[in-house]
Length: 116
Image (cartoon, rainbow, N blue to C red; front, side, top):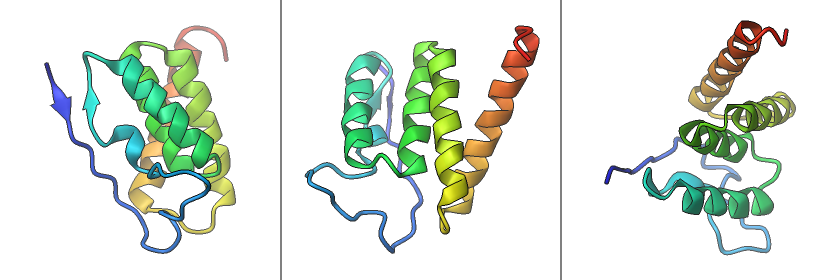
């Protein structure tokens, strides 16, 4: 069993503002177990429900989908993260770079598959 503890970088202003939930915006990838990705996906779905305008959480779920081999869904979430990224004035540059790199991977995959 492989466990990852992923600690995200974030800005101190506003990222952890709670909506009507007790879930953290970083809960999606706090403890991810590759043997139970469905549970991690469920957690990510809860996070997205609470923080739908945060590109970081869509990016996190994209990673889960990638690990599950659901590349089309991963790329769809990445596209949503990119759209939100373009509308957010302040974001961690590392997360921004990660989202853009994943977008490049999605574009390459589509090109290889003959979809673009």
